[in-house]
Image (tube, rainbow, N blue to C red; front, side, top):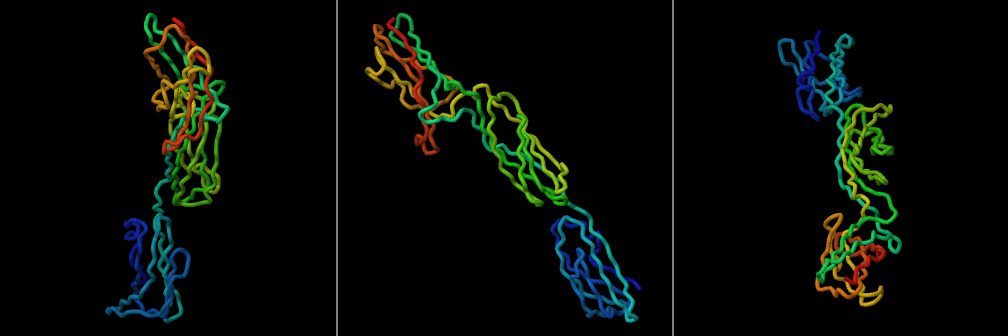
Length: 307
């Protein structure tokens, strides 16, 4: 007495997953009843069969969708003598290899502006000898603050067999964050970190761990925190000018303009060489619509003239 399951294990393994199979059985004896089990669960019981002639009989089976994980297929058929005949096989584990990837979403360098507290560095003003011109050199550096860089990343992890239980992010500066994923096959985690007092090349490492805490897979992302990360988190600047004394004849020879580099030289023309000029720098942050949201105090004065 023989029992044959269709489709065969080779036919199921050859298909891309998920794959839905419609089962049937081929027998060389008349069945009294039968039971189908797939994945360890009873899927169908019955007694209906079709006589194919020449001592062959067919029985219907369940419809089942296979994922990447292995599954046991078992068909038990009861003969007229009350004896069970069976056929069984186990599909292959076709789970893809665990995968972890890091995407750098954003990196913004600079110290946040605190309204009414933050003070930018003092601009450097110098007269052009023999001409009615003044050069003002400024940087958006910070008075008394360490360099900072804010980094945002996205980590995508996949593990179809052992599952993703946690994602850890080693930021490369001695700090590590761990995020629970609760044993899922696919996970996506956003993470943010602020580097303080650090510049140069760093490596971010993201790792996935299974429910037993075992390291399954990891990926790395290199970042560079530039030396000018000592600058303010600012998008605009202006230069304020007083003639002869602070608070007297205030003008802004350079109104609010976009910051395009870490330092910038401005040449002012038609200056009165017999007077002294006071220059101050002020910075501000704006939102995506250009609306000011935070503004620094004015810097200390830089004096030039008369010349």
